Amino acid sequence: MDYAGTGNEKAVAAGELNRTHIGHTVSFQPDEFTLVFGRIGAIARKEGGVTIALDGVDGAGGLQSHYSLPPTQNVYVQPDMLTNTESTIKDLFGKVQENLRGGGHKGDQRPDVP
Image (cartoon, rainbow, N blue to C red; front, side, top):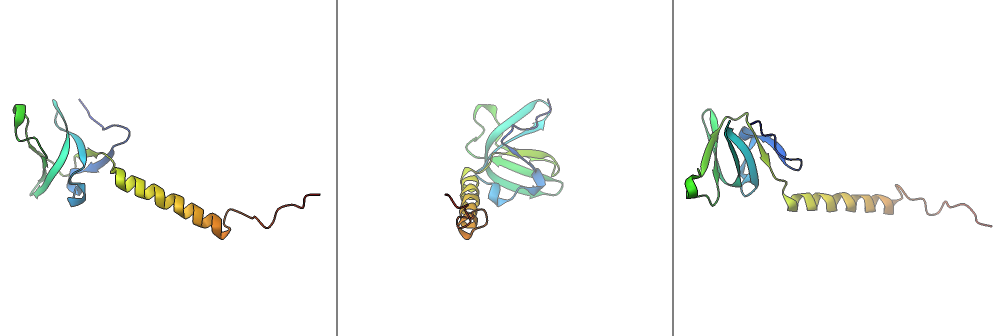
């Protein structure tokens, strides 16, 4: 099994995970037989690896609550909907400002209508 995430997930090397990723939904393949989906509860960097602790697992049903990964292994993070929405609003606001300044609108230069 070679898991490469889904279309809307962003690939991030495990070694690049930081506190901003805590609370995000993540998916990864810790070994050749297992595929993990969960919410990051904690991230620990250790010599030679990164440990991801999943929130709300508590070992129920034989599931592990933490996984050690090499720093170069990709994990797939769901986009943060709030950040995506904020970015979209900023982009739209920027376009509106540009139009109001005349960057894309030439309201005073319309052809004379007979």
